[in-house]
Amino acid sequence: SLFSQLEQTRIFPKNRLVHAGSDFTIHGLIRDYGNSINNKCLQINDLTLLLASKASRTKARLIDALSELASEGRYAYRDFGKTLSMDARFSLIANITPKSFFYNRKNLLGNTFAERCLVVYHELTPEEMSEANLDRVKRVSMKIERFKQTVKEHDVEVSRDDIVRFDEYARRWRILGAYTSSSSLFDMIKSIATAYAILSGHRKITTDEYRFLDLLEPCLHNPFESVRLKILKFTHEGRSIRDICLLLDQDYESYRPYVSRVINDYRRNGVLSPIQRS
View: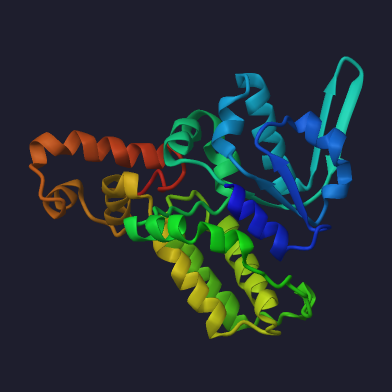
């Protein structure tokens, strides 16, 4: 949104935030920014508009490029003797509507892009929407002090106990968010905790960082797939299909095919082990 973009501009240093807008291609991103985007935050104001305004091939190429940059820090495209490349690692903030996310997730975002992003779900309450409307002018005019970094990433001590706790979060979040791997989640959780420590001026992981992780945890649950996620949770716990139908207060004979189909979907996607029995 316009106001969130204005607020971000006031908080982040100009040399750290890149506003890419909502209508660009990966080749345009390389042309305009190149490797200078390294170690910065790329802000996409409306990912829904970005995906809707592109042809299928262009859209797929953009998502694949962002996925490669997220995992390898490098993207290269070669065609008819022409080579375009980018060597950069950057964080990404993007807004997308639930409808657009679900529409694009299966065939486009898949396990390449979405698996490398922490997807959080939040719906404004009527009270929050009303407050935002009433305080819009105040939000635009308010003064926000720019963040002055005093602690670097290498200054933040991550103890062995922190590593163990991050692993516990990762194993729990993997099921809550239906991720295929807890390893990528572990890296995200560690990065989030470290970033929060830097913002707070802490040189070690404190209760404040864990409190922030706890605030995020409920937002990992997809409210539009609550039944499927319950089936995933129960299957992960070793429940049988009959038990799951009972826990969901459904007739076994009529509901068994759906439960079985959901379990098989999670197995095919790698969220559940193929040898895991229900």
